[in-house]
Length: 118
Image 1 (spheres, rainbow, N blue to C red):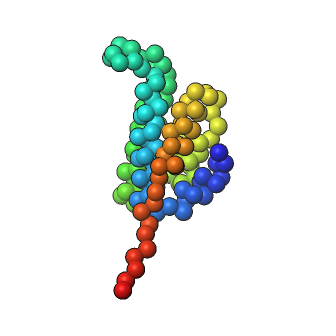
Image 2: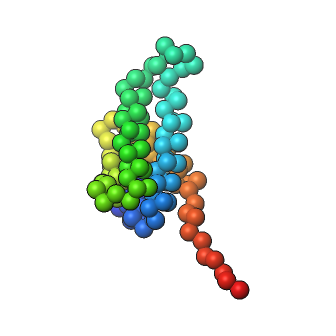
Image 3: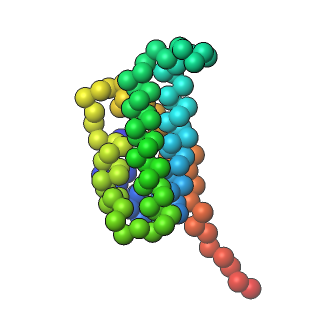
């Protein structure tokens, strides 16, 4: 994965599409996090990575809110993508993010359409 090309792609999206992509990423990340626990409430077997996903979710939901509100104080696009996709010392956390991001990008479609008037 080329971080700079992913940043460039994200920069070129409309605000609504940025929010949609991040939301789709969070959906996929939650899917990845299911591997950190079992069916019972007392069966968390990877609490550190479950917490990692929770913290990332906390940060990104705020970014999505800022995108939708068009807040000028929101983090820059490159900062958001670096937070997600920069290499991590924790390779399990890195794999969780990369797997989720890869599926989100594959399933993402921009709603930017051309309307023909007759």
